[in-house]
Length: 501
Image (cartoon, rainbow, N blue to C red; front, top):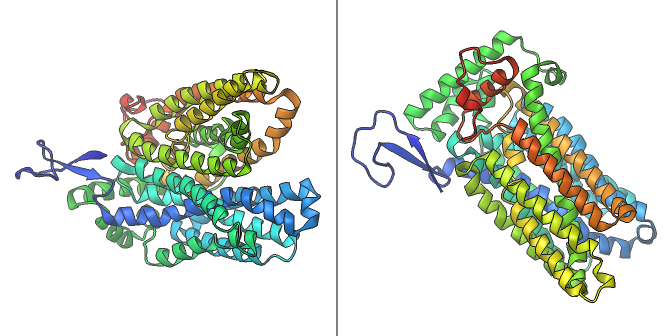
């Protein structure tokens, strides 16, 4: 997992830290300061993953305690989906909070709201107070989903930026895995669901305390004319020779922003051609992450196991653990591949595999094993399709949309555009969650998976046409890509920037 950075003016001997051309090797673990920033910021991803995973187990016990919840599918759906509603609002506001007050304050505010939400949920005397707590938690998750990728990206060397941003996605999948373990741990404890939901506040408290001692994003500081503070942070990330280059690039970006006007507005995203192209690519890949069915496949995994002839509820819960573990392992693979294979190639390979996997799932369900003597065989085909889906999705379409969206927007609009694209992701998540079972009931589960496969094909075409390769590029180089696509090559940008690396 080694990536190389040219060391200017190095004429000394060579050792394990340099190659034969005098190039310094940068690994994900070579700078403990950057790694520390990444891990602490990534706790926001852990909160994201834990909350999305824990509610499935907690709901079973919430129904036991509140009779009105047990008798109302609407209340059950509202308890689950209210966190998504909060996340949509949080993501929409999160972009503005990031650009106005900084990445650090955005993270701290998200932690405070999340802790308040977890306390409200754990102490809720009625389902309606519980729903309010879910809304608060969702607000925190929404802000964190915008902030963590941007904060990590802006504190990372371009050579390993993709892998470090993908660490946030690993924390999301890790949070889902932890949530299933917590569900199992508290099944026999009095106040079961209250512990399941309340314990989610602990990582937020840990992140809040650690974040107090970490700096603001150096790029945000520089663009706010707090240059001396920015240089102090950058000096801990880069060696002197590279530090000068980074400062020069920031100075150029700051000068360009000053010449433009600049008063940040949401409408600029739609009136500026280069911003519009970038947002279309970023929001599109976020939407396709959800519309290719990751949450529906995860949700449907117990049914797929039952098709294979295993009807135990405990086995279904254990399968959820296995699926979550596979998801986390796939993300670890993605961390390595995203900076070596490239974002675009990784997304395309992932979507190709996802399409095949969804077709396998569709065929298994359409053969209707419940009415067939070969039902067990078809059930195992469905299980294989599930395994293939997770194996292909997790390394590619899991981390790539978040990584791309942390890279492709100009500095002044990174928070706003990142927040808007994250909002698209959450809205898409809500649409899929609310429509999948209805669609499956109307046309059948097999045809529904076939529809998702067709969406995956559209996603493949979309990525191939509209999403540029950003592997190893500086933010300024990525910004020039959109200028070239919007206005043509004015002589300041070379065409190779548009070619996949």
